[in-house]
Length: 425
Picture 1 (spheres, helix red, strand yellow):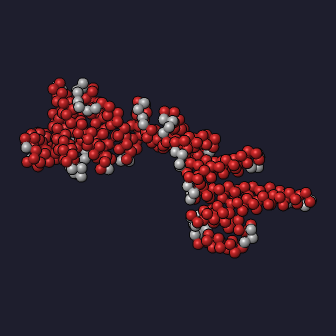
Picture 2 (cartoon, helix red, strand yellow):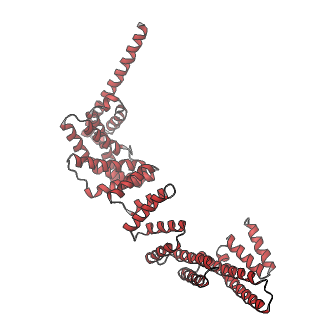
């Protein structure tokens, strides 16, 4: 029994000594910081040692419960941030010693204020935070530019929360209030870049609720919920388009959304708006043409007049695309496909006339076949142009093979079959 008691006492003594060492370490860090401040150029090792002691000792429960320890922790890392900022101003390629020092400095001062039992402790924490907040912000920008998005998030987050804390405690600073909301946005961007999507989305929602969201914020929310919650994605889309009706990125996001839903009429309106913003964008002309092309095919069997009007509109937009870019593969191929589909529609009508052997029926059959053959003739040069631009496009090669088969040009049929075989089709 005595042996067990003796071992227990040793364990307790060991714990007490460990806590005591941590308390001594944070106090030593404060003394080392004082030495460094007297001669920064000649005492870099003192700051480095203070940083190491602060990192290790703050994990101790007794140290972490003491506001003065957190004040020291904040001052040590704020001094490191200040040193790094000075070096960065002189040399943009300088590598900061601790990318997370800015966040640690803020944590130190905020914890010191939170745990303060005397008014001067809060005042000291706020004065130190006020003096350093501009450099914390600067460090966020520098880390972002260097591609360290996780540390940049911590710095921007510290700037935003730090300024809010200063305002709450009525402590003045040289930080520009106009930048406050921006730091919240920057922190979200950095969180997203760092793969912290839950944090980023939460901040983006805050920005929307505050009514200060930029178009990019809505775009991120729209894309984030596109598959998991399409209804919410659509709500953000509607709100964004109402707030920023002339933003191109949001307009294209809505165009893609309407494409997925197949809402062709609304889509045409949006695409025409996009053309007004970007009149030289060939892909917009082609896309509008393809929509009218699709509407032409859908109405061919039920509404000849509407089908013919859609055919003309599709051709018009394809030709406008070619005027912008005479070598546009998409425009050239699309015109060929439009004529090809018209010929295919004629072939359906032709089949319906095939069993009528009367003179009148034969006459109708021959007239319809002539129309079909003429449409294939119109399609041919465009497919040949498309082949010259992209000789391995499967759809182009198949179309050419089919046209030559209808023309009974068997050598060319074999040639194009060989081309298809060569690319694995």
